Image (cartoon, rainbow, N blue to C red; front, side, top):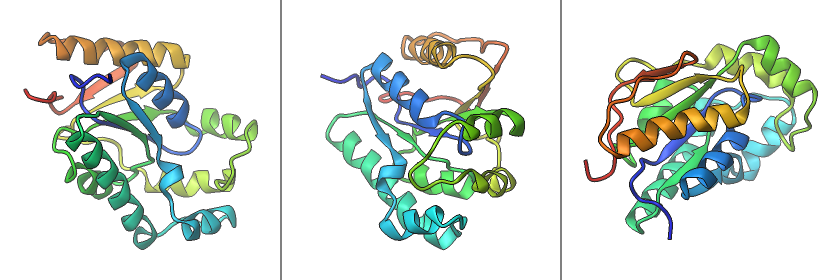
Length: 194
């Protein structure tokens, strides 16, 4: 049986930030579901990105709605879901949040050099590394009013999962928590049933 005391989450950030790696590990740690948002892209989006063309807002809206619907369906069935999804713009995140008002965003933050180095050592099915610059230009960091956690990727995936788990477990127990030195909390993280 999966956990229900944590909020559904979007692991956000540009390509190469480790969204899938962190999302899977965090879901395993907290005993909740994980979905890679890339798997929910329609074929036309995958083909466009595979050809090296950035998606437009019009391309992204149906995809974001599918992600939101997936999160809402899980919640209706008593499941909490973590989804890896770039969620680069604030209005994308608002669209996603319309599916679950308690949705929390975990922003994996890294500088271009670190991200480019990671991308040079991986081969993604349909996301060529040439899209990094357009993603970085599009990215709008979490605003103070958004429920979220921003954390530096200049540490191991294990350290990131440890820190995020520590914050969520403390909040689930009703305790205030101070973020670590590489972490910033935004908004007020509300938990299911709170």
